Length: 101
Image 1 (cartoon, rainbow, N blue to C red):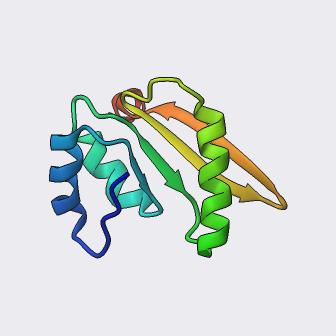
Image 2 (cartoon, rainbow, N blue to C red):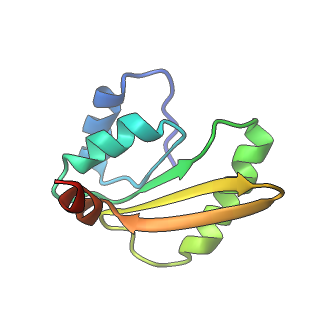
């Protein structure tokens, strides 16, 4: 696991692409836009909204359980609290971009 903080989104994208990382973020808008420009990426996990570190760990654990051992190529997994429950949703980013074009 690589933890990178306080860099511009476009700078991080270079490392993410070169190392073929699945990226975990709570910066939904920037990284959906950046990954949407990539023809192929290793996936994005988005923790929505920005919450305390303890809650981030709970949401990340739920996302990992949701994913299991599946391949996340071009996929986005969004995880969030809905009331007191955790909800995960998943979609292919390339397909979502093609539908909105």
